[in-house]
Length: 371
Image (cartoon, rainbow, N blue to C red; front, top):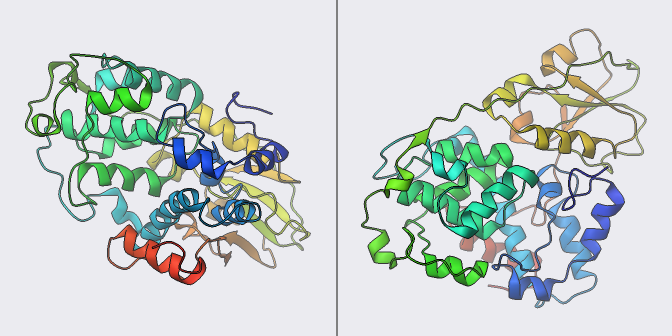
């Protein structure tokens, strides 16, 4: 099954995509809209594959040096995850600094509608809504426009983007927006029209971003970004159907962050995909994203769907053991937790510096090749 042409959901296609990674082309072109990116982020964010799985595959065919940029970017994903583990729900508020110059807590209306008059931005927003994907460079541009040009607080626009992203990951998304807005960094990130034209092969002129970075940092909110709307999105989850379980067998719980078909695949067990209404009320996703999650679940043999809270799932049946994968969204499960598969399992962030984290990873796991 395929949700769209970009992202097939059968496991063989996912593995083929891993095998096709060209880390050298990735390194040279990843910042360009038409660059040779991996298109693996939706499968990573949903736990169908791991960063280590990708790294091991790439290093079986390429040198550490040629794979440097790819592993470096994968390490960012791991860093965000470990910050989430360390900080918990604090990542959903200004984490280090308070965002400055905030004029509203909504979302610029013309951003949502793809009517900013900036060609690359508008096209990328329309494709995001249609396909559930946006190039990482464009995400930074959109975040900068919303937070530092329109002066909206990062929280609502980031939830809007998460709602639409097939690769929506609460840590990567929230903390990246905070990095742009300087609530988890030392300076605000600005993009200008020249930079957008360079990386998106456009030639727009005289837009509200066609200025120097110094001018942008001291400008009033452009008229085209002044209208805003609140975040009022919701998710309609599928109804639960009766499930059949064997109370003598273990219960393995999957969720929208753990859809790994290889996880304990040899264990004779009940396998349940748990969709908790409380989670999706707090962090809603689009129908496109929901269908992507359900389609990835089809790779897991014997998986049954349960819409409801964890407490309701286990209320009527006593299982010999309940097992889940460790994840912040699963902390309330009364279960035995398997650790996720990390690239750098023993390295934890100290302070708030990615580069400090990266240097420790490289020193211990990558023969000190990268610093």
